[in-house]
Image 1: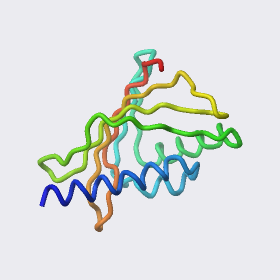
Image 2: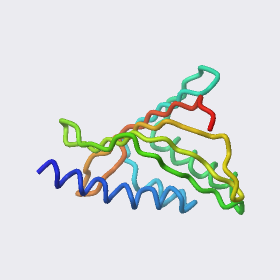
Image 3: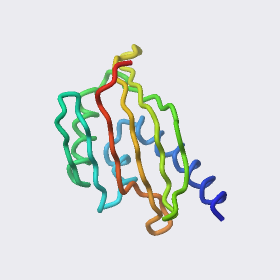
Image 4: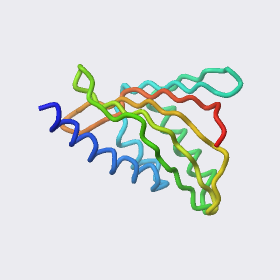
Length: 133
């Protein structure tokens, strides 16, 4: 059962990352649970906590900021697994390209998803934002 769930989760991650690179905030938000909690650890040691609505606004702002500049996020997986609660967990690096050029952005993500109404929804996200590419 767990291997079937893992295959399903990995398949979902492919679509999720296509959404991430779509520059469509609404599409990206569809992958998030209404109960989602987010924590970003910023380079200046300040930690930011967000909920569903704040994360949705963050996508809107990010996509507007890079509109017309061909943004592309590149993912380098460290771990993709199913935990004891039958949740999908993905740990990965994200690199960022703008106008066809790699930036010095390098982020470490830990994201946890669970099935809600038979769809994977992100319930937790933790990001370390203090690395250089």
